[in-house]
Image 1 (tube, rainbow, N blue to C red):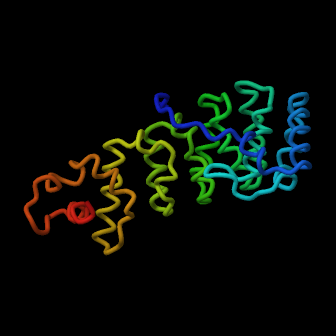
Image 2 (cartoon, rainbow, N blue to C red; image 1 turned 30 degrees about the horizontal axis):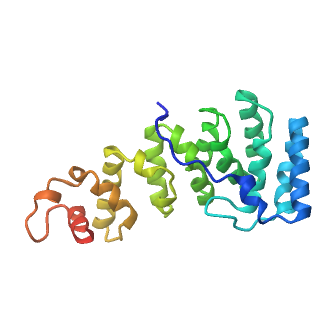
Amino acid sequence: MAVTTASPSAPPDPHRALIAVLDGTASTWLDASVAKIAADPAAVRRLFPAARRRCGHGRLDGYWAVDEAARAVLLTALPLRGQALADEVTRLHRHGDPAEQRAVLRTLPLLDLDDLALPLVRESLRGNDTTLIEAALGPYAAAHLPDAEHRQAVLKCVFYEIPLDRVTGLDARADRELARMLADFASERIVAGRDVPQDILPVVRAFPDVAGAELEHAPTGRSTDPLTDVLKEEG
């Protein structure tokens, strides 16, 4: 079942964020493009790829790059709803390069798509492009990705060394089963003599029973559970 109770923060308004950085030429192009898309939704197919060249691609804020924000403005100008909107967004994602795909994924929470864009999130999570995995695990996935798939996505982030603070809404979505999965992963790493990613420890500590009763009751010294020792040492 898809999660619908999570309410992660919406992304920053892309249009407002761009005002301070776009020069007159880029701003004029973006405004004209919005008008063209509002009049003819199919125009987005040629304008969307051009946004990076016309507006730039530097970092804008903690969420958007300039081209991502510009493309978000174009997507939110589409006068479409429901399946028609999902079909157009899917077309842009499937035919886009990684930068265009990231822009689509980051814009999803601004579009009224309910669960219709979950196939795009799943497609990105199946791949090995860490920038797309990170973009896929934004506010839209936090609100809509089913629990089991969300847990697997978090575990994939750990494998790919994507910092967990980049997974939107993890504090709200983390549960005992995720903690157990991360504890198992950590225990395997410890036994193999490898380091444990520090950002998984808060999730595991929130459910201390997954690391064994030793976490709360072990006497001074080493326990029989190597993960318990790590949690005690890092706590």
